[in-house]
Image (cartoon, rainbow, N blue to C red; front, side, top):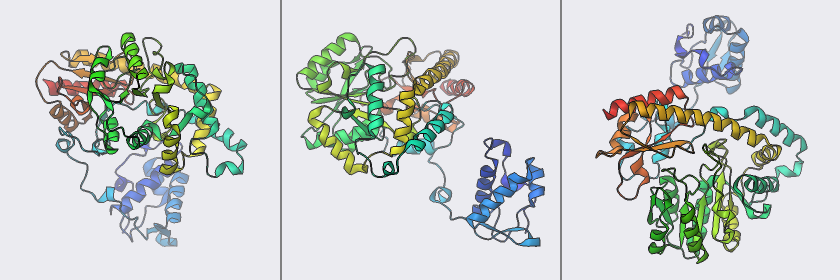
Length: 478
């Protein structure tokens, strides 16, 4: 049995990344073997014939075939050609019945795996919030920094590191937050964590061990953050958010000993904590309240410099958290925390027993980029791209959803829209997903009833996709 031409691949090699066509072709061939399009015993096309069919050099095909030989999937049989001799084991992903239906994702009480389900569900246009322009990742600068770091790295540096994080990155973070957030800190104050999510989980564990059973949160606020607190058996009493940020009076009346805030750019409403509210909050903290400051989206301010971090005003009562997820890539899983002294050793111990510390090499690369000025340059670059995409989304909303009220346009990577109407935003989001557009319903992030709405990310999508996606939402709304 012989596979003739490239029809069995069902793809155009134009999809392949430049310079990696052999990798791409080898991957497509593995899939074809795995799913039975190239069964065991079948013969691959001659390298010359397949190269001509795909309009690539013969070397690309020869190298791809060699990868499969090395994997043990095919073997050269002389005049009989290259024959499939073994199929790769099929993964769970390949054998499952497919992604969950939209109606099963968008439920009034979303489960702990709801974000995983939404991410794994295919969609033509992804307007999920919280993701920057991943195509803008500074690959060249990262590789250059990695080579520099490796050239200078001692053999001992490949051993187990400090669970608090690499000293070089902790120092670079201290310098970074001093320059960008007005925070005075030493390297010893900084704990490197696997993103704000891990930091929040570690802190919640320690606070629970110290007798704290609840942490107040803004309402609306991040569903994901609340899930992390609930995982540690902490209650999350909701505190109203208005145009000036969290209602500190309601916080005081709640009696909660701690509060989780996103004061620089509140998620999801986008409001900035006002000056008088900041002063009220500082008085509350001075009386013993603990502030957990998630410095969410502080790097992406478009109308003016961001307000100073709360940590810069009252260090002893503020646990500060930040990360590179919103301006480099979430996949790096690098974040940092500054923990008040009374909890610091316990949080470090929790980090030690969680994973012995983050991977050291990415920390050293990031430290190099921060100290060299590359990160400031990267931020200036992505701000311009994100601002253009925000403008494209606002224009599209004016055209296709004129009855939507837009919130949070001055900063960040997302917009929240609300409607003065009665309908289910869960049904709206489910209908959008059925039409190939991925969004989040505002009600996911609310603990108390509010107007229906959507949370729409623009960071990771080109302007053309944004316009098309909003047009689809407009058709559904009509």
